[in-house]
Image (tube, rainbow, N blue to C red; front, side, top):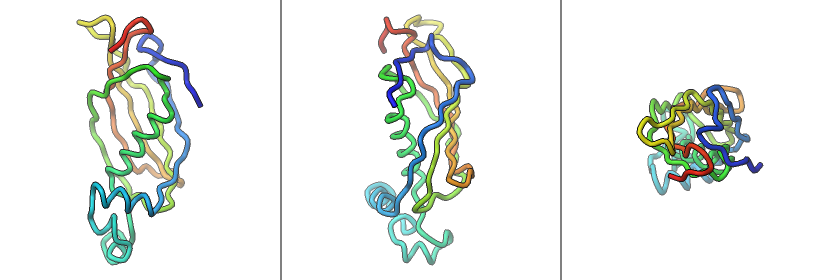
Length: 154
């Protein structure tokens, strides 16, 4: 779904976006882990079955990257250019397994115009990710720089 371009002046504290659920597959868990986090619990189903998790699990970095992809695909700010400044309190709270369907919820916590640059400001959001059972699997806060209005660019 295409969203209209939105700028700092358009955003309100308390706005919430719910992303579309997406599935994490065994093939993508293994593919991601082979490239970026090659530990047995992520790349070897047999070794993972013998390990502390009792089966294959997704790398937390894999889940975080899928959440970022979901944000880009969903584009809640339309085509407005944004600059990620910080992620705080990234927490992996529950393992993600093949077949899990994840859903992302984002909420605007703060909208702060810059005191020194009238053409921009920052938005602080809370992001939570739940599985198909409604269990919280990941959470974090972000700080994003956003142009003040359509007449400004970053």
